[in-house]
Length: 239
Ligand code: ADP
Image (cartoon, rainbow, N blue to C red; front, side, top):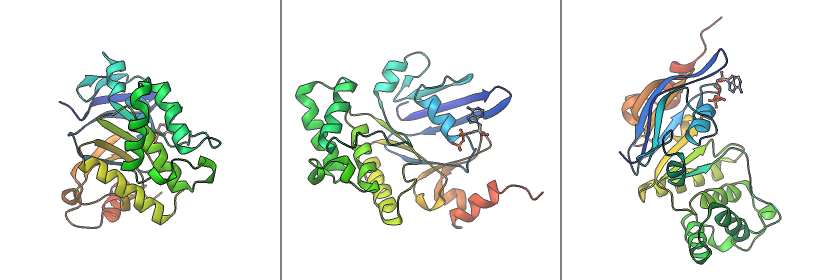
């Protein structure tokens, strides 16, 4: 199927198991929150999804392309926003996008149009000429999301994209990415913050390398606040 599929994926760093048979699917055009406390295995899963690490068992498919058999095709269907910021602060927003488009092999003739359209989708068009150094954290993140859309991916992965942002910027980014999913993009949004998840989102709760819950967020909580459900599921046992 298209969208994103993770099937019985395992990964251990030596004796330390980080992912212990993780399976879930995100249908096309769905916003899926991958919610887990620190150490749950979210970053390891992202490293596997983006081909930085290889699963020791299981399989991953992106927009129907198998990461093991056709990594190039799978990666071409995927846009990624990593936790660490990777924009050049001395270039403008538009220059950063053009530079990345060239790296991605987006043909020069369409790179400009793609950049304009991506900035438009993130409501960043009027800042195209500003240097990244002059932007606030929220606008930098939006630039990075726009950059991840330049090659027209089907699936967008974001690893804790709101870390370090204030409440208003956090809400704006969460809104923008929900809008992208409503337009048809498949989204996997990793977070440890329950308040970023909406009742209609798909939700996967990951804890100690295992999926504890998988379903529509409102159904997983049965109407209770997600923060309470999440804490009850993942609270360390008293010593
Ligand atoms: P999260 O991103 O949800 O915080 P991680 O994927 O970073 O989780 O970590 C999952 C588990 O794997 C944790 O127990 C962590 O300590 C362990 N881990 C992560 N990276 C390494 C590594 N390079 N070597 C050994 N253990 C690691």
